[in-house]
Image (cartoon, rainbow, N blue to C red):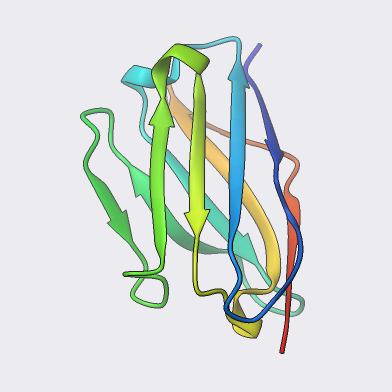
Length: 115
């Protein structure tokens, strides 16, 4: 059974940094596409960044140059390094992965950026 557990969220001031982690179990992440999404109150869930099985990363325009997605295959964990945080980055952040045609989601971690 695939399980994803996010951690690293919290409250920071604008301009600050956080690193989110997504630890996977029940599968090997190194060969799977994975991504970070976020959902702010009253808004739809949106893509923040994703990383292909080969390691290529793509980012939403709103986070380009500030966020970096990566993964540590030895730890079976994906990360999202977030720098230069803005109040509009406030949301619940979710990680996901695609395995055998099924998308698996974590439970989410709250990020709050105060001005």
